[in-house]
Length: 119
Image 1 (tube, rainbow, N blue to C red):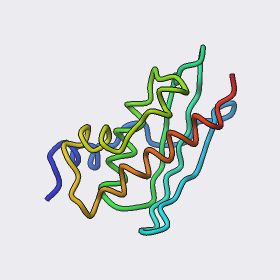
Image 2 (cartoon, helix red, strand yellow):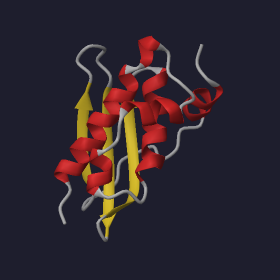
Image 3 (tube, rainbow, N blue to C red):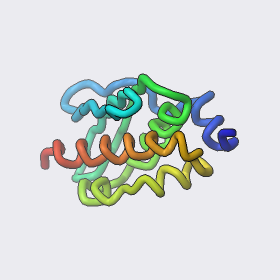
Image 4 (cartoon, rainbow, N blue to C red):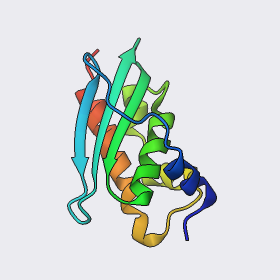
């Protein structure tokens, strides 16, 4: 059973879509389940000013993308690199064991954005 917080983000996802250039956009996938996350971020003064996401995947991955897009705002590249699956898991009120991959997908996306970011 999914948590109320996860279901809220699934039913009312925040920051859906893709940002135009000069935003950075990355695609990450989970080869085990096939979920795909497209993540966009626009930086101002070294911090994420806007973030958007699109997910092709399960309920947990959609909710996790929503939580991730909110969490990213105001973060620096080093802070994006520090994201852990546990942070996403806790923000969603706990993920079922079969849905933990959703948090890992978010970590992969945040780290890819951080590596792609230009000063």
